[in-house]
Every structure is written in C-alpha cells, then in structure tokens.
Length: 453
Image 1 (tube, helix red, strand yellow):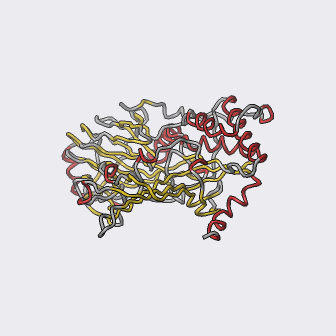
Image 2 (spheres, helix red, strand yellow):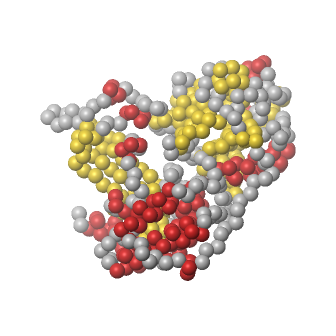
Image 3 (cartoon, one colour):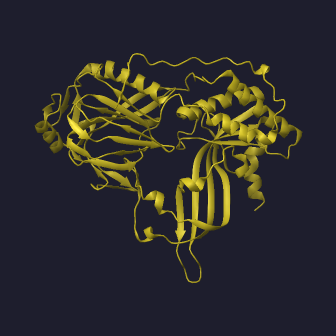
C-alpha cells in the first residue's frame, strides 16, 4: 500500500548547535575507539529511505499526453488505446556487459522515447512535478535541490516484467529514478526494491495515480503484470548545485560521544605515532567515480559524513572519501554454474540475476590478499591519491565480506597439474579520517609502497 502524503508539507529540520569545548576524551581507551564508533554510527538512522512511494490522488494533474501516430490519450487508459500505444512503442532493451540486447525472458516491456510523445498540460511541469519532487526529496533524505529529467514512457501488458537489476547513471548528477504511475487499471507489476538486506514492496495495482522512487544503487524488480496495463513515465532524478544545508538531527549526547572517541584516538596517535594513523568507515551506498563527493552522498551516508566532517574540523582531523577494495586469492573448487553463462545487467547496462549470488567460487585456502583505497578524493570530489594500502584493522566495522559475496571474480579451472584458483574483489565506498599532521604521509604512501617494490 502506498503512503498518502501531503505534497505541500515536506520540510527539513535545522542544524543543531554543539559546543565542542564541553566534551572530553577522559577515560576512553584508544583501542576501544573502533568498537565505540561502530556502535554509535550503526545506530544513526537515515533521514530518508532508500525507496519510497506516494499516493498522488489529491494532487494529480492530467498531463494530456499525445502519442505520435495515436493522438491524445484519455484517462484512465482503456485497453483499445493501450494496444494503440503498444503499436507505437518498441521492445525495451537492456545491457548485457557492453552489448545492448532484447531478451523478453529478462525484460518484457514496451518503451517509447520522449521524442515520440508530448505532455500538453503546462501545469504538469510548472506545478505538479515540483510538488512531487519536493516530496521525493524529503522521503529519500536528499539535501541538494533536485530535478526530474523525463526519460521514457513504459507500458507493461499482461505477462510483462523486468527481473532484478540496478539503474545506471545515465547523466551527470543522477542519483535515482522516479516512476509516475498513470491511471490505468491493472493488477500486479509491483516493484520489489532491496538495499542492505532490506526490501520494500512498492505497489501501483489499481487505477489511481501514484509515484515510486529509489536510489540508483538499489536493486529492484518489476513483478509480472497479471492483468490490465501498467502505464508509467520514468524520470532520471538529478541533484543540482552545491551541497545544501545538512540537517544533523542526532542528539547532542551522540555528537559529544563521537567527538570524545575521535579525540581519544587522535591523542593516542599523538603520543605514539607508530599506532594506527587512520580510521576507515564503509558507507552503505555505492558510488561512481563521478559521484564520489560529499554533495552526492545519499541518505544515511550523507548524515554520517556530515557529522564526522564537523567533528573532524573541530579536532584538527581531515576526512576523505575513497573507493575501497579488498582482494582475496586462493584455491577454489568448481561449481555447478561453470558450464553456464550469465551476465550482470541493468536498465541500460546491467541486470543482476539472482544466480549471481550463487555463481562465485568458494575460496577454501586463501594464499594472497590485499586491502587498499583505489581512489581517494577530498570532500569536493577532487582526486588526491590512488592505490593507498591500508589494513583491515583500520576499518571500524566488523564486516564479513564473504557473506555478501564478491563484486567481481576471476576464476581459473584445472590446468595440467594446477588446481582451480579464484580471485575475489569486494568494493565499497568509504570515509577515511586522518590526523592533519599525518595527511602528507598518508597521501604519499602510494609512492613509498611503489619505491619498496
């Protein structure tokens, strides 16, 4: 069931003030900092959700859509007009690796490009869409101003579906997808959206207008339409402008605890420069190189990063963003999927089949591993270092990468007398905190490591 929301009521709370001089690190063992920080940050809730739905009945405006070769479309959509629209459409493709393919067993949807239809009602873009975007911005916990870029018209008839996939970043600044479900009687076609082991079911199975939205790195599946026609407009959600005013609504006590622990860690490093010189926190969401900057962080990631940045600035610490990579190599056994070929696809590029989670080979005898930050950027996204080696002990969370499965794998079967080997890569985005006096050494670490080879 979709949420019924007053589209005019979206608001954001103001920043809280915090007197950093009132806190003290007395009594905190630097060795306990990882556990303390992990516990604190784990309990910080996102300001928004990874996916949301909104009932639009009270605010809906007939867009007065005209389709080339069909003419004006009356609402609600009737079966005869739906068939006419389908005749004007083409089968929606998707990407398989570097190829763009059509495979109705993966994606079975009619698609129409914006050049083939028009929205005649001026209030749609002037009044309706700004109100929808304001609500979506609030529900997803986005801080920047956002806009919606019309992408496609999609028509799902009986039997239509799209298997589990992720959306690609189709334009700079894109962070998510908005789907406007137009009035058209149908049953089925629910969207199952999943992120960080949480799943939401977003439904539009009736004739009422609604919208659903999600972040780009959210896995989602459009379930099979049982009857009728699911008729939607899809928009790319794009974040504009510089970072907005971030709302850090955690309690003063939490912020004091955060400061105390980071201060204790910094004090420990100052007294013993040979001790751990960086703290690494793995983020919830995934980011491309283009979106790895403070202004592009999503939901809970943005909230945590802002808290940490404020605290770091007050303590003489520097915070960076980074692409984290763990590599494991070892002996492995073949599995049943070795004779099969399946890819990783998305809306325009990759479809993530459920079999992907089962396809990797279990490493039962690890003989090589590495942990590094493949790319380090400042808060504005400017690259400052690459291939910085770190230790697993630098990561404050206790994270079992093996439970999630690798993001990528190289596998070599039996060759002569050699057994099977597999190499697994686990990739995340991360925040990295470094004492200001250690920044130079941290950024030059890549060159020191290369000189030792």
